Every structure is written in structure tokens, then in C-alpha cells.
Length: 102
Image (cartoon, rainbow, N blue to C red):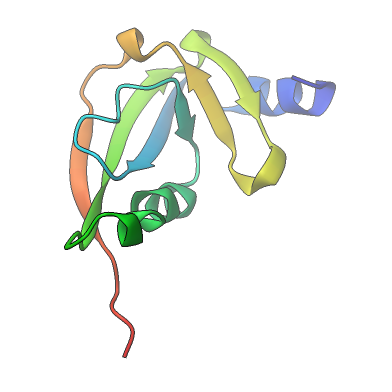
């Protein structure tokens, strides 16, 4: 992390809501999460075209203590939070539907 990322992490609330978008059931058990729900929604549907018949991905939402965050990465607009997935509790998973064109 650079100084700006350290400052951003230090400025977050003690309890942080994090989001993870994914396309395969169970893929929320991972270290990379986001502070941005819209970015996580994008990740939930971005690869659905490679899964024949798939029309929805998944959005996991959890709350994590700022003290458990390993890193904050602000690049690429992802507002990424890196955590040890073993520290997650109370993860809620919902479906994200891909909008059909036309």
C-alpha cells in the first residue's frame, strides 16, 4: 500500500461492509473484496457469457473489522479490501441478475 491507501484504510469505520461479486457458487471464500457494491455487482455478471444458460451471478456481503484488513488497494476503481477469508462471519449471499439486451 502507498501512503494514500494507508490513510484511506485508517479513515474507514471500525466495522466495514465489504462486497464480493462472483459467478460460481462458493467463490466468496476468497481474500479479495470491495468497498463498492456496484463494482462487486459488475464482477458478479461480467463472465456469465462463458457459462451457457447462466443468467445470474452472486453477491456476497459481509462486515469485517478494520483491524482484520490486510490491505486496501485503491487502483482501478475497485476500492479493494484484502482479508483472510477465515475471519469472515455472517456472510450474506444474494443473486445478481444479468439484464438482457433488447
